[in-house]
Length: 193
Image 1 (tube, helix red, strand yellow):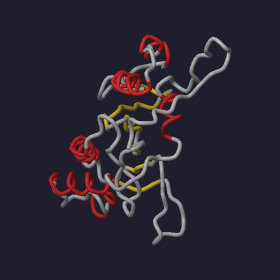
Image 2: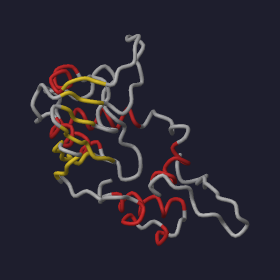
Image 3: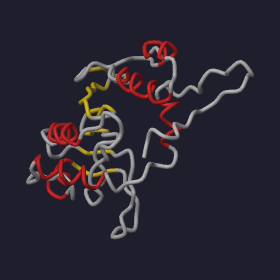
Image 4: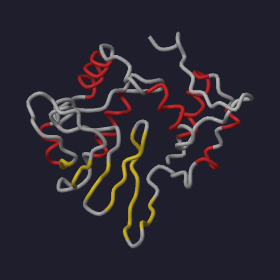
């Protein structure tokens, strides 16, 4: 996990009114990566590229992009969550586009637009740079930020995001049981609109 998980924990602890002392990232995650940190997976050499809300991992001829890029016919991730930034997403994708054009790109999600019949989990840097409908090699930062902000303003909250964040920021663990022995997930009723 990125060391920046502490920012996520701090932000959402305030939203959910959770005592931040219970979210020690060093205890919840096996390793907290510095930006650009190189590491080994057995004999494989890997490194990360910081991207908003996650890290992208480069391993050999592949990059695993998390919630940054989607299939070129679907575009890019949304940026409307707390501390989200279309400007930061643009800069991160441009860093990914500096990778060798033959690098395979493995995606976290595929939302299958109407024009395509089959789900996919793999594309390439070349395909992204040439055909991504939101951010390709000719897209300016101003145009991307305007498009992303306008589009994100029309999107509804993902159905399971509010409970999922509480588990994710705890490294996959459920909240501690309260005095009655029951674990609770909170829903901030008047924070998100």
